[in-house]
Image (cartoon, rainbow, N blue to C red; front, side, top):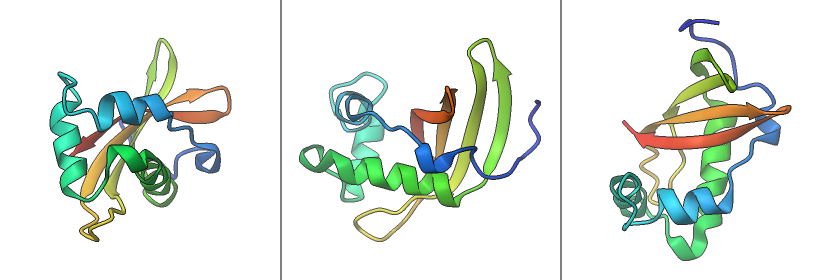
Length: 114
């Protein structure tokens, strides 16, 4: 598949963002890898007790922004999506999300502030 930019994330309307991925990783200040991401997202108005707001924002991000990279891995095609993400504070920063196809649905692997 290569590094060529592509179209929209396949089946973005079925995108999966698990509660534990947000609560235990992306909004967990104590997580070794997720802590800096948590500080970034919390500073933009997201909160652990309203984790579903970040879930909705990440799904919206996947639906409206283009795939910038698609690579074949041993687990299937991994898609990277970049650009603005809606945030409660209205700043809507550019982030990178990485998605892995799980059956017909893309599942969020990570979100990275840019």
